[in-house]
Length: 176
Image 1: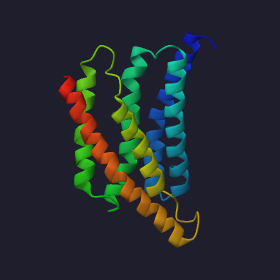
Image 2: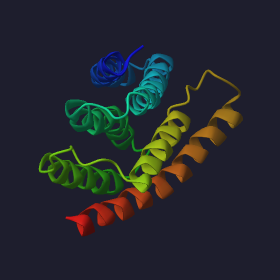
Image 3: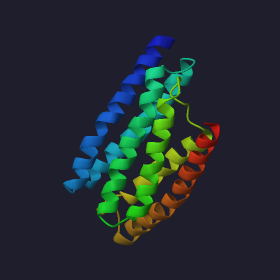
Image 4: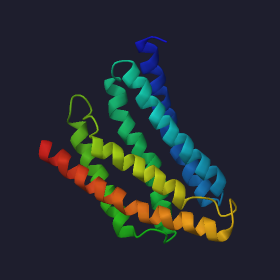
């Protein structure tokens, strides 16, 4: 596979990830926790795969660099909003995260390259995916005590992801 093909495939994975957001929120709202969990996992794996493909090609497209962080936000904010509405995470924390994402998206829009992600921003995304996978672990996938422990672990993992989100935002703002 040549560099151009790798970039096209990476961009295709990014678009596919953006499209997962709606079925994910619909699955959550309809009580299809297993489907929602698998969609979120698929989205997280596609994020890793498109990044790998873009690096393999010597860098992604400018279009992909702009779209990738937006698709991550769709995929992460959809279940976070659902968790907030279900009183499983505090709305003020989700509001802080949403404000951070809007601020950084606005900053990135003004960058010619799409504003590449910092290492702390990437770590934040990985922690958020991990926290969400634990928080959304379906009730029927194990004994209730074990599932409750996974949900609790996801809740506690959410907080360092929020701190990383805010600290990486500060890093982006300082660059600006």
